[in-house]
Image (cartoon, rainbow, N blue to C red):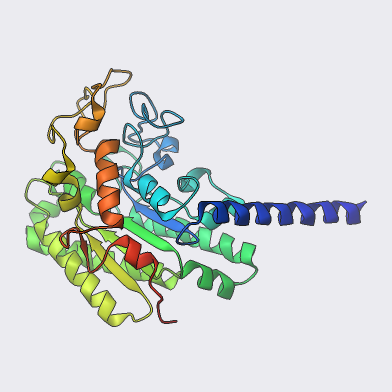
Length: 340
C-alpha cells in the first residue's frame, strides 16, 4: 500500500514538472523566471492580506480579466505587460498566494506603501518593506533549491532570471515629505537623504546578488515635488559602479519619468485622475471612473492607467530613446550571456 502510494506521488510530481515545462515552452519566455520587488505601482495582491491600504474593490481592476485583484490600477501593471513581452503565458503571481512548483516561473513581492527604509509608509498601516521582500525571496530560493534538488542547480537557474526592482517612491512620498510622522527631513538635506537611501539600496541589491540574481532592472523614482532628482542621479551612478565591479552580472537603469510622460505617448490628459478619489488619493469605492480610460495617463492620484503602463513597459522592454533606459533596454539585458 505504501509502495503504491509512493508511486502515485512520484507520478504526480513528474506530471506537474512536465506541465510546467510545457507551459513555459508554450509561452516561450526569454527568461525562465521573473522576480518583482516594489511598491503599489507593482503590487498585484500582496497587500490584500495586510491591515493597510488595499484596493481589491471596484473600480480597481475594472479592465483586468478577473476584476479587482489588489492591483493599484484599472488593469495591467507595467510588470504584467513586461511578462507578456517576455513571453510568459500568465502574469507573475503574488508571493502571498503562490506555492510549490509555480515558484519556478517567478514571484511578485511588491507591497503598496513600502520602501527602502523599514519605517516608510508605516503611518498608513503594515507593508512588506524591501528588506522583508528580500527575506521572502530567500524563502522562495530555498523552495527552488528543493525542487531542483540542489543549491547549485538553483543558482544556475536563478542566474538566468530577470529581477525588476522599483523601490524608493514611498521613501519620499510616505516618509521624507511627511514630517508629521517621520523625522528624515529634519535629519537630512535632500542630497544627504538620496545618498543614504542609495547606500542602503546598494546593500539590499547585493543581498539579491548573493541569492543568485544576475540580471537587474532598477527603476528610477517618479518626479515627486522636485525632490527625487538626486536619488535618480545616485542610482545611475550605482548602476555604473555595479556593472564595473561585477563581471558576472548586469544592471540597467530605467528612467520612469521619461517613459511615462513622453508626449509621444499620445495621452490627452496627464494630470487628472480617471476615477473619483477619496481623501487618500485612491479611487473611491464603487464609484464610476472615466469612460475614455485609454486617453488618461493617471488612474487615481498616484498610479498610472493600464494604457500608460503599456506605453512604459513597451519602452522599457525595447527602447529607441537612450534616455529611457541605461545602458541598454530589457530586451537586450535578458539576452545577454554573462560570465560565470
